[in-house]
Length: 218
Image (cartoon, rainbow, N blue to C red; front, side):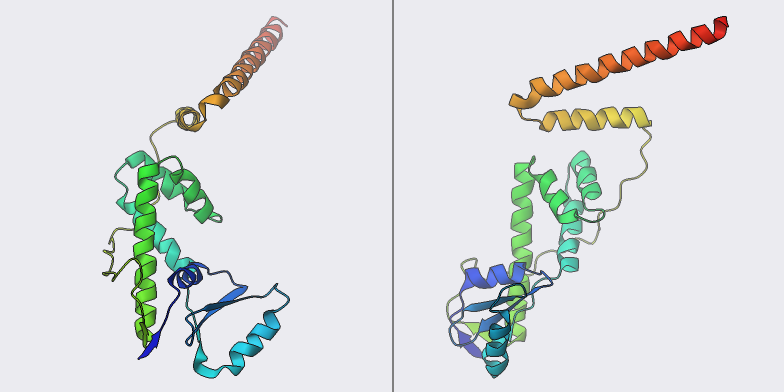
């Protein structure tokens, strides 16, 4: 068991980072985290330093994108608000899921804080287990203390069932939800734009009706 003066903030950042062009190592002498980014001009020299260091540098295994995606799925399944659960479930479908998920939670501060707490517990557990596997003992305990295994939700968020709403009603509901999220200062512009769309729609409808009457008269 190696006792290392771990720099917890650096190690936590390294475990969050899972970019394909980035790799991190823990210096077992100092507790410093060495991060190598392919695009950096010193990347080659740093890799040489790590390779020549033998077992001094311990490769850090960040939580994979797939694992972090599962964290989101489990969290979504735990959301009590049915409408929010549906929006989050839709947000994590497809490319850009992490960004869309965070964007939705911006408007729900209490759920956003709950997500951060849940994710932090999972991340710290991941770090704790990695230290055990590597036979590393921290000289000083982490600021968050010992982490118990987070409760895993058995139910994974399902895609929303097909709604009984018609296409028009569904779009109106989505529009109302969007309006509720618009800052008050932007509401006059949004209302003016909606008025414009309404007038244009009425004018188009009248034009079509007039064309229909002409065709009938002919």
